[in-house]
Length: 171
Image (cartoon, rainbow, N blue to C red):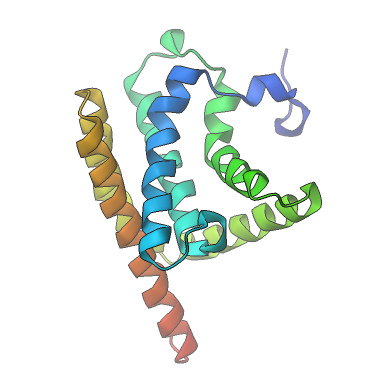
């Protein structure tokens, strides 16, 4: 039975705890650390760190789907595909925003992400995400987090640079 993206029940979009721990938790930790380094103790307030979170989870989920046979996935495919936005929704929801504000924030994040991806800004973190995946495969959790932090920093710097260039009339 085929369902459209919007027709999944909530449980079909939830990751298994093992996959959450592999794909979302390390990226959340790295993004929160980078947001704090950038002067905001609240991840949801730093758009660059939220975009980094979305792209890191996306990269890890993509690597997972390529490396692990589908028959071995613990979570359904729609949950793996929804994980990047799901991680961001979790952050916004835990910030005590009401649902309409969460939806608005997610829409803004998606639009910003699409615009920055069109400019290639998301590429800044790909190397760190790949290094993190390799570390996770070897149970090197601390190394994985460090690689994700480097990826998040690189993404934030790229976004800041893009914004500065845009603000100066270049694009």
